[in-house]
Image (cartoon, one colour):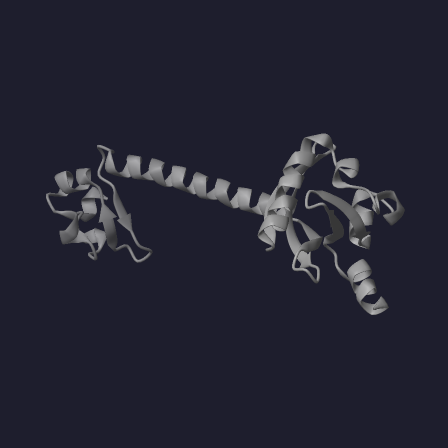
Length: 193
């Protein structure tokens, strides 16, 4: 028994809370692990026995109660994401709520595992921004390539044509399909280079 409590208390880096369900719509803290105490700057005596309403900011209370009620009514686990402002910096969390049923099949307690996903969110945001920038760059290239009045050929590293724009067809008199795979040198006279 002490072994498992020690694992929950010290061995898990995510924040873990156990809340007692009272009358299906009130939730009181019964357990908080070391990671949660350190992150929140609390001791277990500061939170054990208190309800979410007594601990959480007012602007978050209704949202949290809604999530916990879903678990009580459905008797299944549920996950949600939430964000908190911490001295001008937004921190993102993913919380999984797991119901524990009593001998009558009712939700007696809820285990909340709260994982910090701030870095993952920032990485995802950076990836989306890079993809957007790449798409924008591709659109600019496409516009320059296809709408340019100058002839443009794309060559591979061996000097063979892989593509060309409409203007290059007008200048050379060849369809692009006819010159793809041929050396660029076959299209120009040495004195023209």
